[in-house]
Length: 92
Image (cartoon, rainbow, N blue to C red; front, top):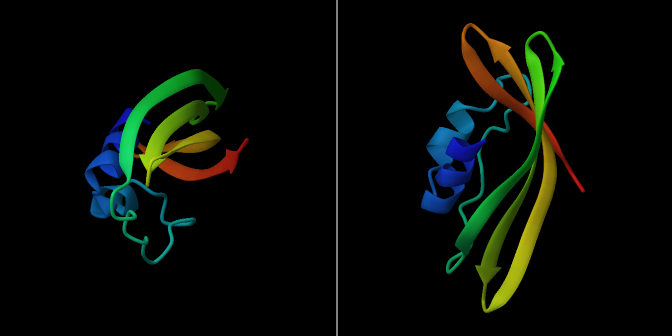
């Protein structure tokens, strides 16, 4: 989760796509809006759902055009061939 947050903060869309599970990965991602600044990540919970599945609840804070934003999400991940893949997320 932290590596994906860092990728968002650095605008590394290539990394985000490379760590997104092929079954749910979009063909492309829109670039980050000009002037978007990521301010921090708070991982609230990590839950093992099954042998090779887990969820991560987090809040990511950002600022755009002087306005603060919070993204509160529960992301689903799956472990395949020794790698954790992002499946999808539910915004809370």
